[in-house]
Length: 104
Image 1 (cartoon, one colour):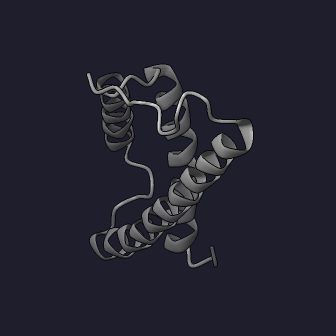
Image 2 (cartoon, rainbow, N blue to C red):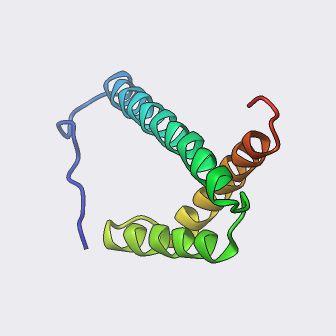
Image 3 (tube, rainbow, N blue to C red):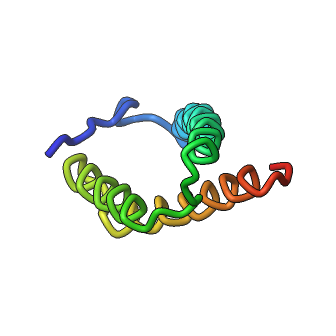
């Protein structure tokens, strides 16, 4: 299990902590945008290979990976499962729109 040390000194104040959280949120948004671009590529491949947007076995594989990684890093696996399932539903809908020729 990997644990994370505090990134601020013990005597930090809320504005400093909030600034760190905001910076982390910005990094997460960049990573989600990168994932979204990969989903667009997945839709192109699925169209070429005549695959559906939703592949249930893959959904379960990704959710299991998220739970395992969360547990490995000290994050609640149930939270990771909920977040990833929500994210996957959004991205499956994005793929479905691309596969049906509708704009995203």
